[in-house]
Image (cartoon, rainbow, N blue to C red; front, side, top):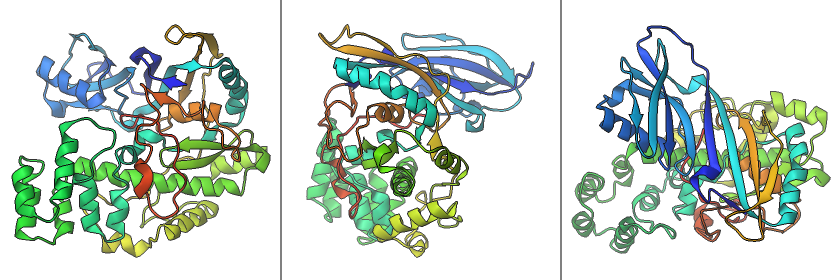
Amino acid sequence: MRLKTIPDDFRVRELLQWQEVPGGAHIVHLMHKEKLSTPEALSMLVREANVDRSAVAYAGLKDRQAVTDQYVSIERRAVELKLANLRVQPVGSTDRPLTSKMSGGNAFTIVVRDLLPTKAALLRRSMPSLIKTGFPNYFDDQRFGCLRHGQGFPMRSVLLGDHERALQQFIAEPSPVAITGDVKLKRTLQLRWRDWEACARIARGPAYGPLFQHLLASPDDFRGALEYVPLRQRVIHAFAYQSFLWNRAVSRLLRGGVDSSQRLRIATLAGDFMGWKYLAPEREEKLKVMRTPLFGPDGDGGSEPFRKAMIEELREAGLTRDDFVRNEVPGMIWKEEPRDVFVKPTDVADVRIEADDLNESRCKATLQFSLPRGAYATMLIKRLFAPSFYSREDEGYAPTHRGGRDAGRDAGRDTGRDHGPRAQPVDGDHDED
């Protein structure tokens, strides 16, 4: 099956809860975009409307390979834009910039293509149990681009004190799936590693120049060199490994609470995780109230069952709380953050199955539903097609994005000790809210 064959196959509408304040200093705009990430759309808005970027605020990121509607606020400016792939129009005003705390989630309309009739029937049969008992709120492949691009987890290398390896993963680990000039550069840096004069000649400009100048002055100070990696990259990679361990801990937690006959296998770039078909009502209630935060060394770890699961995952990864202090790198610091382990879709429409107009003799299914902020629509779809946890059937349930399920097949090779089997990869651009 395939997702996002064309942008219109994946439509996202932000559900925002902002208070209308007539005459408020922040003008709220509806931004409609196609084949643009949120940062790309905002850059166009700033350029085309001559808006100060610091005056613009938004609640969350939306996928590039989609048609999305989201809100942005602009301080003391009402803007109208009508471009080929970007439209912006004012819809009200409020007294403060928009923030993620105002998000009520997202409404999705998704077309799943290239389905065999049997798989289309499976999707329809799976929907009632998903509506009734929800699905695990795992982070999906959009969070793990570091695996798709063959980097592994630089954050794990940082925590283990191997700052040189972390730096290699950031700047000298060529992607097996990318086709940009950056791949050639990284391959060259990999071959000339520790010849800092050569690296400085090869990789110039603001992204690399200061980093290699630092290594020329202090050849073995890899920890210091990491601070020259762009902050956004450091933060993204820190979140990726934090999210990975959270997924692992949730899957471990579920082993003790899901009957073996109801266990499902959900495949991701970061390994296979446990789901469920149905949950006993008492187990559902326990999951709803259980505190299951992302790990931070200064937090309490949440409810005891989850805390124990996370401690075991850290132990298997060879990590202790002291590692987070001893090997700290700015921008790669974890804070405990709440995240629900259990999510249910709302506003679910009947599944519509039709002949696929782009794939002969195949079906397409149109799904409509809403999810809270932070939940992944692609994870819901994986749950709908998930086989029994003990089945090794793969074909037909791991969605493919825009051609090719082999992209990055070996990208998880550096994920750490015994951190789950490799799964069929799913392409993604970045996180969605």
